[in-house]
Image 1 (cartoon, rainbow, N blue to C red):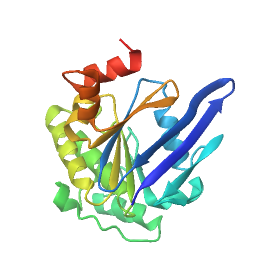
Image 2: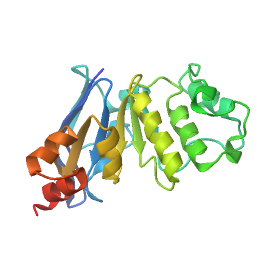
Image 3: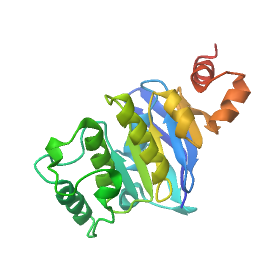
Image 4: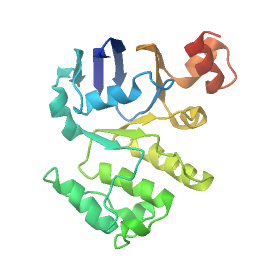
Amino acid sequence: MSLEVQHLSKSFGNKQVLRDVSFKLGDNQVVGLIGPSGCGKTTIVKIILGLRGADGGEMTVDGKRIDFEKVRKKVGYVAQQDSFYSFLTVKENLDYFASLYDTTSPVKPELFGLEAVALAGSLSGGQKKRLSILCALSHRPKFLFLDEPTVGLDPVSKKQILQLIGKLKKVSSVIFITHHLKEVEEICDKIVVLGRGDVLFEGGPKVLMKKTKASNLEVAFVELVTGI
């Protein structure tokens, strides 16, 4: 299943944050949505989630136009902060979030290193992030948005989360929002680079590196965004 954003625009007062943004999220991909602070990444995600209106543009799923409000059932979202109830067990959290969509959770927490009966508030930082991701998967979304999923984690936990993301693309298209470009280079099949309210580049990380003749994605990104 593919999701395509076409000619998206959004202004806040006299400031135009998004001008004419278009990009596509394909099947079984990890897509890195990257750009400098204030470039509109969060605004795009909130519009796709139906949490904020757009001034212009549309969205299609498998080529069929869909209202932003109706796409919510197809989308999961993991914010930077914990996205579960600390006073419930792991399984109780999964069941609760699935029930919001009148379904049952397909997730088996033991397969992801979590004990079903463990109290969510007692988990380690890495385990809490895994639980947040699994809660977002509890209604079987076709698209999963992850906002800075490795922030504040130790190196081992970061590695575990990145490995989990790599596995998730078998069941959901994953949109990975981050400033850690080494992580993007490691796990993303495709990147969408935002800047000045527009899409500056859409394609594979290695394609951008070749285009800019850069040794790594961070150097390529800086050159693209700043023109230096």
